[in-house]
Amino acid sequence: MRSIPFRIGAEQRHQNAIRYLGTFSGLTRTILENSAKEPFPALEESEMLKQYLELEKLRFGDSLYINMEVSPPE
Image: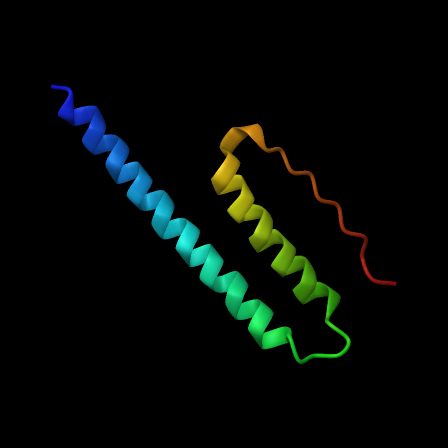
């Protein structure tokens, strides 16, 4: 009976790893695509920041609370 919680835990860790890798690859792709742009577009920078914060949220779980406010462009 002890193997059932372990299997459930293993499946959850597997799903978290897939999600983390997907987010990390998206962040890396965004960085590479925008590395040559001058100036760096603010909208794309905010998307990059959201991806990074999602990685940190996966890492720290509920112990990390993020509140992000972005002013609209003038």
